[in-house]
Length: 270
Image 1 (cartoon, rainbow, N blue to C red):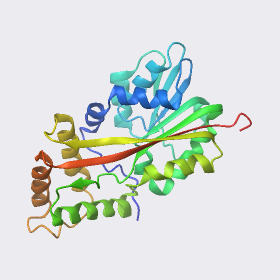
Image 2: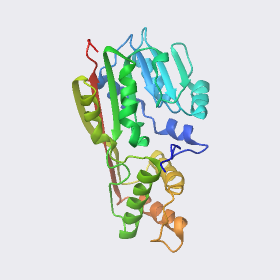
Image 3: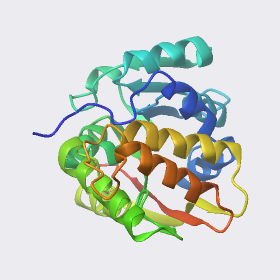
Image 4: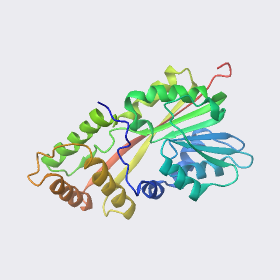
């Protein structure tokens, strides 16, 4: 039975999202996709609202940004931290039709579809419905998410792959979403599709505080709650956690995750 619960749900999730959201990356990716002043923008799966704030700045003067998320806790945080003139936040399940929100010139979907493997194509279809003719849909996600490390012991490698397999099966998580994005835009009939690939995680040498916190939370929340048995470890999850922390703190460690960004334009006749 696939669960729709959010695998990273914990009381500090809004703070984690705020910490890991980088203005320079958002700006570069959104400008590459074609965002410009005056646009009406939807930030799908807006989380803490920080990205919505950055997108709103990019569409000034005259633009509007709407952050949409199914989590009431995240929307409450966004309202408290990032509500301003021209920005609003909506708590809504984007599995459902979104036409009541009106139509948008630019729709941004970053690090969202990976949590909705069996429904990701359906979600994209809902978004195309609220995209204006000539509007831009930008999909950004990871590939081989959390799976590319060098320096792991054999049992740590087995455990990490086992955890991700468990999340795929039981939580509808997709570590390989990035490679599918182009096909979604192509199959929906979008035009002028462009694709860019870069490194999202590129971690080597001394570990910085943001990466340390982010990956610690991934282990403490997603790995712990995955349901994986940790049979490789006589001490169970705690022993796995201890070995992962030691591996990740080692400056010899090398970790990377490819990021794939795709954008397409809706036909004027659409």
